[in-house]
Image (cartoon, rainbow, N blue to C red; front, side, top):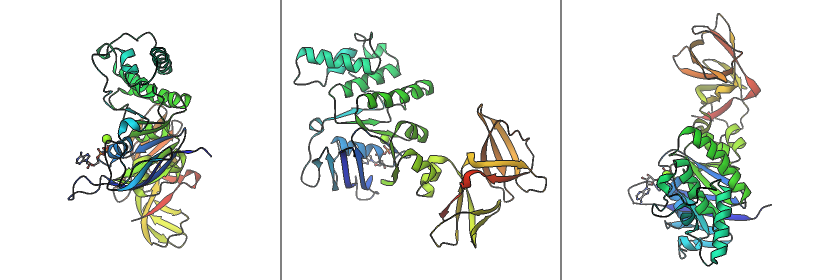
Length: 346
Ligand SMILES: Nc1ncnc2c1ncn2[C@@H]1O[C@H](COP(=O)(O)OP(=O)(O)O)[C@@H](O)[C@H]1O
Ligand SMILES: [Mg+2]
């Protein structure tokens, strides 16, 4: 078992008495070398939690421990520069009057000139910026500037890297490429990291563990696969999978909905709820006497996205391989692949 690099216990942060806590009883553990994605909608407390770990915010209750050392509790507050962490922000925050080399070397203290040069060189190789050493930030693209910020944060070889939506300002092509590379870079450097994002696909792709936040608290934490296949709440399911939800009522072993009855195993005893069906789990077949009708079809390259209308007028989205081609207006019956229906209480 890898050792624990970060342990947060019951952390709470309230900015003002009249508002909900920005961070509410968050506990989590990060193991050495792992990448944790903190995922949640805007305003749910991701940045505040990251700033608490970094040491820019104190907390009302709870503790933060980095590599076995308490850095924050009711009596201790170790300042950011003594926490051995690297930080990358959304807006790069480079020094505009310093070159790439000077930016990357900026945080390196207590090292000889040769050691600094060596570390800077290694960091620039890691982020693939060799050849651009003498440029100034304004001479670089957004993606290159973020690579410099990454190299600057990595050069001191921190115990923990904190990245706050580092890709949000970049256009989609660069974002996808850099997302792949950041994961490789962190893994190569064997650096533990927390990567904050509001983009579910980004969170799943980059991390070993995902923590989903909602209104200050951690709603679920688990591997990307666990979060996707076994969302702990309707909120997680909706946010992470963009699944469909339909009201359902228990009837014996089945859950009855307007589009059919589904078998879902649950140990809970509630009688009404909402079933969840992921878009990719539908199997569609034409069936003239069905009341479920294809309203529209969109071609997305690898797949079709169908919008179906239910008898009560609800919309359902289904994605299929491109070998299922059905025209708009077709009545269809559905089957669900892999027994993938889930139920959540109302
Ligand atoms: N310095 C601050 N003073 C008062 N409220 C704040 C401050 N920073 C953040 N908040 C509030 O805390 C909540 C969480 O914010 P934040 O952590 O920035 O969310 P996220 O990064 O997930 O978008 C928000 O309601 C925000 O308005
Ligand atoms: Mg934020």
